[in-house]
Image 1 (cartoon, each protein chain N blue to C red):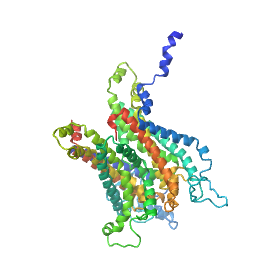
Image 2 (cartoon, chains in turn green, purple):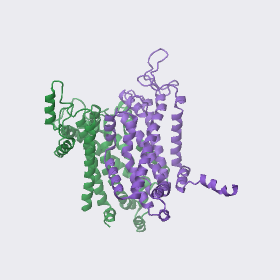
Image 3 (tube, rainbow over the protein chains, first blue to last red):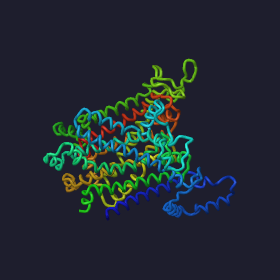
Length: 325
Length: 303
């Protein structure tokens, strides 16, 4: 329990550090945070009054604590261009990002784990010799390039998938859930998910393969062999279960990491998610929105790092015991 | 005179420590690493002789014999990979893009490996408050989301390539520093280090003469990985539109192709080759790091 709190404190501190860096980074950027509200019709006095109203006349360190306080209350300011609370805008697009990330990760990991275990079993065959470099190549390809090639071929050339967005224009839904569960949404989701899954499957596959190779030499596997269990039972029931531990941790980390990496995939497919929001906000210098989107991604990353730490402790008793002694 | 000096010069010139010697001999022992080195050398050669391989200016707008802009030409003997929608030679862009890719990759790799190695060495060897401080900074850098951070930084600071390299280096050094630190922790306790300490060797001498050569392979692993990461990141930043539009790079080509609808026109010759080049360079880095890991650190294999 102490260890859990320790890891939580560790990740929370890291997140606080990120928030701090971000606050000062954005504050040092050119332009005033009031750019969206100030126009030529306001005289100097009115501008001053406005600065006071927003607390911008206070010293920077006071502003920092006000900012932190607002963050804890879930407030991230107003977007310069959309003139709406940043929190509202982000919560609107967040589900799209989460659905995209989780669907692709689940597909990638199910495939990666099975294929990795199978390749370990086929150690030394020609298939393994071809498959490993091919998998490495998918990890080496820029995500957005995979997306571009698939988009050109499957969407523009063959017309199997829509070329971008999350829903066809002209369709109206009574609720957000109805929209997400519609066939149209799934059709739009398919190509980004395929792209992301193709990019992500390499890690679990290679991880699973090397873990399997390692585990297959351990004593408990030899023991299972000596008990006369079938090869299949040994692979699935004994070796795979233990080889799976690091993959599960990698999955949690993967959720956090790919939320950040989604930036490019969402742009290729015009997928209305948090990454694309960040790109748009940065390119029009909408500081509050960019800051908010970045923080949201950092928050998911920190949260998932914490989950990975927990999983590691729960799944592998050696970790918690090893550290106690 | 001749008698006295005879054995010495020969030994002096070859007094490479065993660690360094194995480092240089490794590519010959691992076929993957060898392939990686060959790929690097091939790209370096292309970069050096780019002007001869592709004499056409990659940004020049070309015209057909009839005097029209040679836009969207299919691949032919004259334009090996065709032309862009503005009539620029794609093959020339691809060849010249090698230069910026290698420049970005190598400079990021040098910074990452140097910073990571020095921080890892100092942190692991001296321990104490300096170790705690450096590792907290590393934790902080690792908790920044990678691509978003690079985008925000280049989006606001400007699209110069140096900014991209700096951002990549800022986020990648902690990985190498952490691993090198843990390696130093174990090397510090070895008998030969103890022996050096007993004979009164200076702390820094022990660190850089006795310990550092043994972790050099690790530095190389992370440098090789950083080359690929930097090139992919540069391409991604370019693709998102925060790149330097005047410099010719593979990322800029992909961005150009994407934004001018090359995808819907099916101009595969425009956007497939830059991606394949990126894959080749990155895979070469994987192969080299894999080779070093297999030879030097069998336990790290496959990660």
